[in-house]
Length: 486
Ligand code: ATP
Ligand code: MG
Image 1 (cartoon, rainbow, N blue to C red):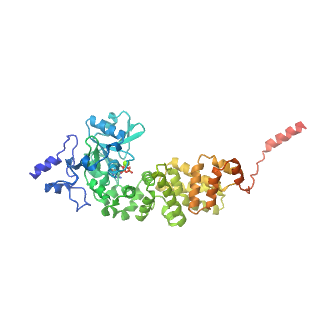
Image 2: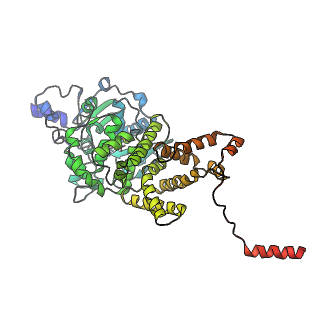
C-alpha cells in the first residue's frame, strides 16, 4: 500500500524528465528536526500545511495559498514560459524572482528553468543567444528585457556530461543536465529553489523554501560546509541576500562561514567583482558591508578595505559613500559603480599619494603613480572592469583641481564632463572631515552663482605663473620680420 502510494507520488508524470526520487529525503542534512517529505508520506498525513498535492516530488503550493500577483510578472518572462510550453517543454520562473514575489517585492530580473536543452531553447526563440561556459545558458530577448533560461542541472557527482570539480571541491564547470528535482537540490538556499508555473499558477517547493520565506529564514540546501566548498561565493550571497531581504541566516548555514572565509581567495577575481557589484548596488550596501566585517569575509575582497575601515576617517568616508549609494538606489536613482569603487579605494589612494609625495615627487605625477599602483594591487583580488577604472581615475584626477579657486581654473572645471561626479566626491571628502566643509560649500555656491557673482568669489591668484616657453625659431623669425619691417 505504502509502496503503491510512493510510486504514484514519485513516478514522473512527464516521460521527458527522469526525476530524482529522493528529492527531499536525501538533501536537507542540516535540517534534522524538520520532517522530510518521505517521512510525512509514510505517516500518510497531509504532506504540508501549505501544499495542495505533490507534483514532481515537490510540494505544490496553489495560488490561493501563495497569492503571487501575476501582474508583477514581466511580459518577457510570461512569453518565454509560454513559448516553451507551446513547444512541449516544462518551463518555470525560478530563483530570486519567485522568492521576491513571495516577499511582496518587485523582482529585478526573471530567470526561467526548463527541461529543453540550450540548443532547443535557442531554436524556439528567434531573438535568443547561447552564452556562458561555466553554465551554458540562453538569453532570450524581448525589447530591452533579457530573460535568462537555464536547462535543469543534474548532479555534478554523477558526471556523465560536461563537469569539472577542483581538489578542494570547487565546481568550475557544470553542464550536466538533469531533472527539476536535481536542479532544485543544486540551488543555494531553500528560498531560491521555488519553481513557479505561470500557466497553472502553482509553486513547486522541493526544500521547504516557502515555509522558510514565511518564517524569514535563509537556509542552505544540503550540508553548508560542502556547499561553500563547492562555491565559496555562496558565503557572500548568504550575507547579501540576508541583508537585502531581511532574512535571518539559519544557524547551521551561518556557522561554517567564519572558518571557511579564506576559500574566497581561490575565486576568480572577475566573479568576485560581479558579486561585490551586486552587493554594493543592492540598496543595502551598508548592512552588507557591516555583516561582511562581522563575519570576517571582507579580508581580501577589496585589499586594505579592512585597514581603511579600521581608521576612523577611512571608515567614516566609506560608510558615508555606502549610505549615499543606498539612499540613491532606494529612491529609484541610478548609482555609478565607478563612483562607488573610487570612494572605497580613496583612502588607499591617499596613503599611496602621500607616499610618493614624501619621496619627492610633484603632487600631480605622484597622484597618477598612486592611481596606477592602487588599481594594480586591487586587480589581483577583484578585477574591476576597465570601463570603471577609467572613470575612477578621472574622478580621483579631478580632486586636486577643486582646491584651485583662482583665475580661470574653476570655470574650466565646471565644464568638465566628470565635474558632477568629482563634485559629489569632494562633498563626501568634506563631510567625512578630510577637507574643510567650507571648500564644498564654496563649490556649491560657485556652481549656482551667475557670471558676476562667480567672478567675485574667485580667490587671489597666488599660484606661480606658468613660464611660457620661448620658441627660439619663432623669435628669430619675428626678429627677422621686424628687421625686414625696420
Ligand atoms: P538577486 O535578487 O540578487 O538576483 P538571485 O538569488 O536571483 O538574487 P541570481 O544570481 O540572479 O541571484 O541567481 C538566480 C538563481 O540561481 C538563485 O536564486 C539560485 O537559485 C541560483 N544560484 C545563483 N547563484 C548560485 C550559486 N552560487 N549556487 C547555487 N545556486 C545559485
Ligand atoms: Mg536574480
